[in-house]
Amino acid sequence: MPETDILAAFDAAAESFSTARTSLAGVVFGQEDVIDLTLATIAAGGHGLLVGAPGLAKTLLVSSISGLVGLSSKRVQFTPDLMPGDVLGSEVLEESASGAREFRFIQGPIFCQLLMADEINRASPRTQSALLQAMQEKHVTVAGERHDLPAPFHVLATQNPIEQEGTYPLPEAQLDRFLMQIEIGYPDEAAERRMLAASVSEDAPGISPAMTAADLIAAQETVRAMPIAERLIDNILTLVRSARPLEGASDKVLDLVRWGPGPRASQALSIGARALAMIDGRKAPSLDDVRRLAKPILRHRMALTYSAMQQRIGVDDLIDDLIRTHLG
Image (cartoon, rainbow, N blue to C red; front, top):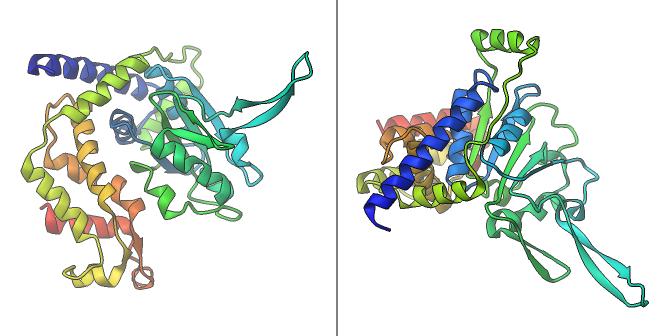
């Protein structure tokens, strides 16, 4: 593609995401960073895991995004009795008027462009694993037959960090499928005051589409075509590799980290930094983008040792230390 065409595509995509960000800020108050990270996840073509206490607008955020980017969406409430067929679909035996019998595949809710997997850790591991193939390969296999999912396809899953009784922690292979784990905290007082005013207002803000599904696909292609400096790639590799408890790692990492991020983390930082730059209207990512994305991209790809728990050191604390040491 000629450079002029790439620049025109970038300007169009950046303007659309700027409109989407402004619209979301008028619906979800006090979560500007969460909005940016979620939009960057979509722009990068990835999946997101939203972690936060009840009542922090996780569901509102996902439903609003589906309207803004013009995607067909469905919501699945994950529960312990949810079966894989309830998500993927199943084959049923039908008999025609002539008496002939044949199996027909009935699509499950996963056949959409944006799936909200609500409280994903409440489903059994068997059901959780049903999403693995879909999230990575964009198709499912039922009764030996392949069924392609609509394009684009994204999963935005939510998880409640409290009330862990009766839940099933996501396995490492499933967590690695998520581009980012986005932590949602409580809003500040000013944002909460705006919520109170909005909750009694009759003029609720509406969501108008900022782009179509085709526009989103074009934006995702533009993100992958964006340049990234060799120095920034070196910084990404240094940060990710420093978090692995292997020979040559620091004594602190060897003591505190049980297992570290794999190569997919480096890929996620590279594409995520480009997407975040585009959301901001910048034509190339910077080191600040890598710093900003380090925790959302690395925190679910690392596990700490018992020694870290004894010292009350969290994974975010360790990532902050790695950023200071290796990125300045």
